[in-house]
Length: 192
Image (cartoon, rainbow, N blue to C red):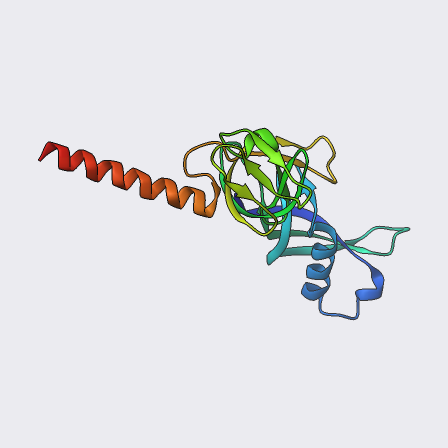
């Protein structure tokens, strides 16, 4: 899920930027410090959207830099359990598929790609034995987040599933929707 987070922090502005506009220097320092920052509380910081308040600057002896208490707004992506996300298949290998879901990739284990026995071909395609559904690089998919791990903060892990109704490759859930409409229409005709 994407969020806007209002944050208050002291920001260090190095002395070599004192000749610049203070707000521009602070904004540059904020971007350097927070863009692509990853934390369990914020998720992945995509960018600094605004500088809301700037307090008085304080120079620390021995450092020479100015520290400003600032309030600013961040745009973040924080994956939530059970959230449905859209993504594009970036890579397929023998144990599953990696989906690009924005600033992070999620992994769909081969057993979670579809309700079928799934095989992996050397052409990097996952194919269902009975359904003949196939999944390849570049396919647009919907998936549900079933696991999020920040064990390695530089590389959070997101586990996904596509084994639920209206998930998976776009054409799969569109076909499911058409099939459900036909069943409803048939039941309606039976009642008449």
